[in-house]
Length: 426
Ligand code: PLP
Image 1 (cartoon, rainbow, N blue to C red):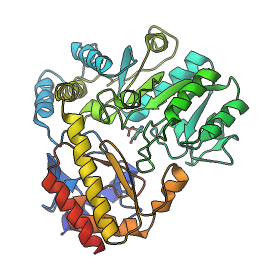
Image 2 (cartoon, rainbow, N blue to C red):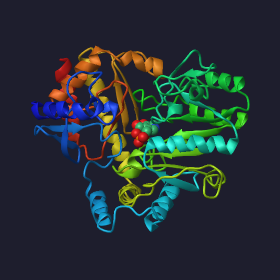
Image 3 (cartoon, protein in one colour):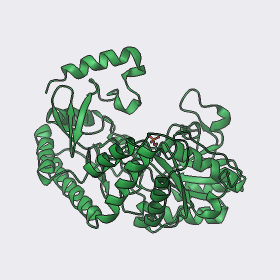
């Protein structure tokens, strides 16, 4: 495949945009090579500026669960745009999408819309702090909750001590209020809570981690977090930016039958437009301004185009009773096929999957947390990534990412992908 025009465009972009990209994961920094510039996409396929067609396993990092340029969503946005693109005043469609989201997701009474997953998580912890009058939060190493200061902490000197910032610009003052725990390790979480009695406002967790590759919660982990939060008076926040409206209509709360106190959304809820949201029981959500004292706002929050895309997406998901079983079947088929060809070629691997979230780690040891996810960060991954790209299959350019399966993928696409993997390692 030729990437001449992508290379040219990247060189031009680098002159005026830091690193040539508006979000670091888009660069090919860890795998080498030049990022591909996309021109358009339809269904399961991306079409780049050089005219190559790629089968897409990233799907805008999750939102395009029904495929790219999904007609009902596109039409809803076009029709809405004709009526004006932003008012900064209440609109009926905001209530419509809120009603639908509240009816689909268990255990939430109210929801507020923002513009990204980052904003949703940032606002949720402010609300949790305001509601509990406590300042610290617990986050898990390897979980990503957006790029706001409190979350850019991954390495501390031991879980019970203060975290240290891992991005310059995050102050020590902010870092000390973020306590780091080990994913899937309840004893570790308990120890942190014991050492910080009556100080922890919330535990925020990706109920299925997707930002260290896909790492499922061990049996009892989410239930254990619920019990610990109840015991220590902290709120449980499920970051469902990836899992919401993807693993089930009601997200991870429905799938695992565990209730969180606050839930954050992004990605699918916006149908491909910039949308995030956070939600919870009325007693907590009513702590938000203008009813309550916790301030949170946004010029473009509830933007009509974004709400039109999101509402249409949720309506499509709600009415398609077979969607989640189809996604499960397709992704299970892919998992089985990948296992078969990797085993046949004697490639050490571990595949983690929950529903339509899947990742391949090139190591045979079990991956259950951030440290074990690191085993798969190796040269085999780079060979895999570039091998697939050469065959016209696009996966995330990092071993710490999850693949997001779309309903637009056909079994022919899946077979093609499995055969491509076979070719790479044969
Ligand atoms: N939370 C999770 C679990 C995410 O995966 C992401 C982004 O990938 C975010 C939060 C941040 O969302 P956004 O990139 O929309 O700000």
